[in-house]
Image 1: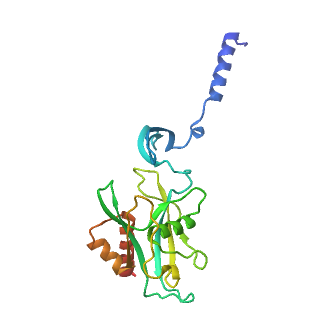
Image 2: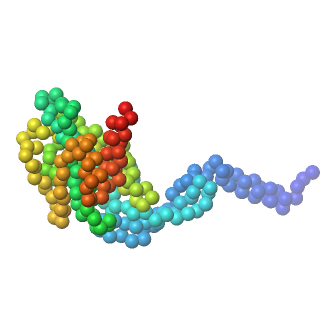
Length: 236
């Protein structure tokens, strides 16, 4: 039996619409970012609203703070430096005497002085290793090792993912106290407006004492580092 022309047209239209429609497997996976809109911006920070689809397929929004200096999403914004100070004595390191450096500075967002590891932004075209060595020298005056003991660089880690997209590399830097540049009390090279107090403390007991008894508020990362050292010593 031949179909009338109208029925043929209807069947062709249905076939074309069925073939052009996307199957569930063709849809972008969830959760996913759909768009990002800038709400406001200053010289250093930008407030953005993210439109995203959650695991249930529901459209949602989230406000996030990002640095205007951010180079790309796959590169960290800054470095946090863990300095290890000791006498190398021709590459023979003393295991029983290791110091580290802490910095204290007034932080307006929390309205008080904090205690932190040295840290700073990574300049454009700069490696995390070079940024760590530069920031260590600028903030504390100490010169870290680059060739004899290569700095250890972590993968990118989040700082506060519910608030900001900032990521950092944690960089462990050896500081040779036999280096003449590190004798006495090295002089920091601070930028205008920076007011930093450098504290040299023994890595284990001294670090814990500063965090527990000091008046400055510890940043979370340094507190977790000290807690990890304490747990490592007591559990192993």
